[in-house]
Length: 235
Image (cartoon, rainbow, N blue to C red):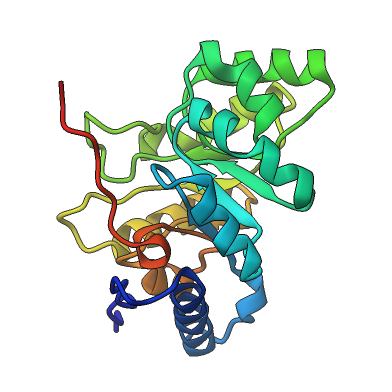
């Protein structure tokens, strides 16, 4: 059974929303016979200001996710000065020409999805001496507009990344918005298991409870914590 995500009402504080998400994670974990501590909550702060991140940090949150390298570079250096235990996850597509900046400013990469990116990361890790844990993104819905390697190509790509000595720790997916997410989470778990990977980055505001019940170790939750996003109008 999927429980509705906590309401992000205008009156609720970020602290209140965080507490509600943690309760829901604990309930889903209990239903699956899991320790809630085995699930890392990544608060996705894309488009929200540093003040919102600071408010979440004041409530105890330390793992944050950003879609764009530039936004991470702009928002987090000052926050790290006061909170050196902050962990920044890159959860959006990574261009090869942004790899050097990503390695400097982020701590985990969730969107390793192609050989050219794997090669560039391997070069930068070797050059800088900084090796970020990497999740391989799998396009479980095989959507042409979405990043990620195809499920049938995942085993070979995992092997190729390991041959480059990349620190691959798990798999990540974003199921098609119009489909039931559970089969996609189950598929990701199956691919991870047969490749000896035990970390799964899956589940967002609308389905993170389902993801936890199906083995997610990292859930990426934005609007249920920070509220609805307002995007600038297209030019």
